[in-house]
Length: 42
Image 1: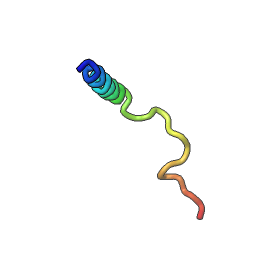
Image 2: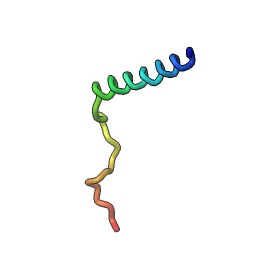
Image 3: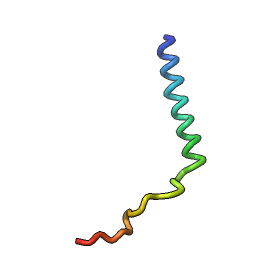
């Protein structure tokens, strides 16, 4: 029973931390060079 409570606390805590982090920073501030708009020579 104790192990289950510890595991549930870790899982829910991680979920809350992830939601909090993503709500504060929904997108990366800087992106690496390249991407969908980059023209690649054939």
